[in-house]
Image (cartoon, rainbow, N blue to C red; front, side, top):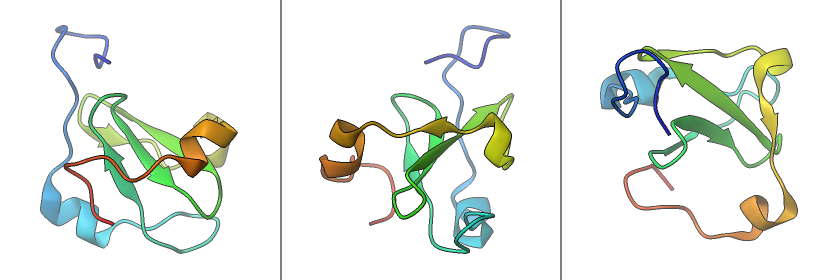
Length: 79
């Protein structure tokens, strides 16, 4: 997934990821580099990252499918 501006994949600073939490559950987020999203498995939501900025609004989040929830965490993100 690209961030929509320059065709490059979005990325999140690992230190920022350590500080971020799901706004609904206050639980941890996992980085999904393939989709450029921060995933809250507890809330079953994936928050987009645009231009390197996490959009932490539930109204902007994608609802995870059953397959997304059941799949193991992807490499590159915290467990």
